[in-house]
Length: 403
Image (cartoon, rainbow, N blue to C red; front, side, top):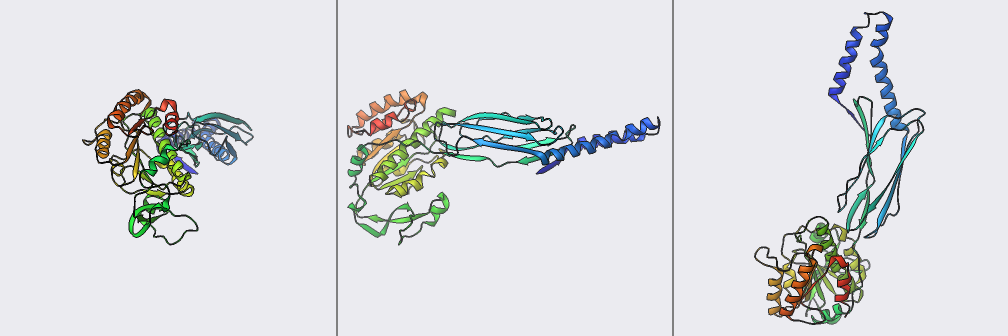
């Protein structure tokens, strides 16, 4: 509970009380009665205020604690005044933290004796991210708003995870092109560092990567290098795509869905995959479903605010898939994704680009991707550049890997 006093209003009220008190002998009993009115009023208002605070109750209900992407969450709040007389005037404020930055109108409180009040709201969760909703605070005050009592309430936090779609066998063939599907296809060399992997129960003999643990919150261990390239490198470009508002959210959600769906496929069929975020040069090794879950649970905190170019997609021996919301031909820092891809393919570097444009830019990017893929050549099953359309949801992604 926080009690706040408004000094200016308090001084004005005390001044009025002193003026009335100075007039108490002018008209006998009447003036004396008038002079004590401010004191009686102040005591009554304070009593009502603190009694309201003690007898006020509320209850919140949510239709689910685990909303999925695209769900509409139903929210209901019920407030009740348990006093046999009217409660003090107040206001209920609401939390509003979500990718959409929606603002909820405050609820005025003016409850009569034993009176209740309810409100229902619907909260859309169309995008991946962290949502927090519910009442944030209740405040009550006296008629002159000299004294105010406020109680703050912790928000209900919901994690809306990205949608995962079923990826076909085309991804498996791409992994085979970089040295084989199975992690046992190349012998491990403990003297060579290759990547990082989440620590799993029941497995020992590892060396903990303390810096990675501190920076990501995921306990990781060093994975020794191997004598030959194997598996995949999945890189999620975290540079902003250039769109704003829901256009940007749609593109980013599609990019995240594509990256994590590909990673889920790799983990499900035993393809060792290195997952790299943004401009990092090192990723996290994911070789099974347990490792994927450890990475997936952190997906709601992935933000597109990294200005670094995803260089890891264009280096190394593994086949790489880069997922990006940045326009294909847009040069940033003198280099576009198309230029980097063209240069990598000229060196026989096995890399593919999946573009996730905003809805407004989807038609333009798809036309550019088709023309660029013809120029660059490559496998017909999986061209060098594939552009998705967020207006179609994950349909383009499913079709691209259906084989």
